[in-house]
Image (cartoon, rainbow, N blue to C red; front, side, top):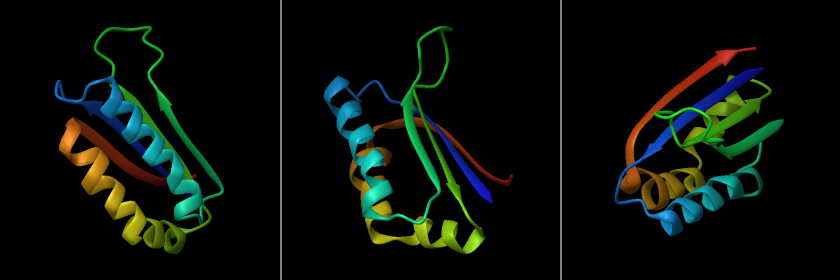
Length: 97
């Protein structure tokens, strides 16, 4: 299994509406792209100052399924339209679980 983890910190230009729209678009990837066995997009609980804002955690059965997701046009469109324009920072990793 491949676990894909993305931690997003939104820019100051990303108001509440833009953040909500981005999170909704990210959540739709489960249906629009598929291939994952588990998929979560969640906002930080706000318990510690300085945390990132949002996390995406997706599990894929294998590296090929992850690659199909990563290259899927719907995924690339969400990144281009709803994520990258509003990011201050992000960290990404994939690991074998």
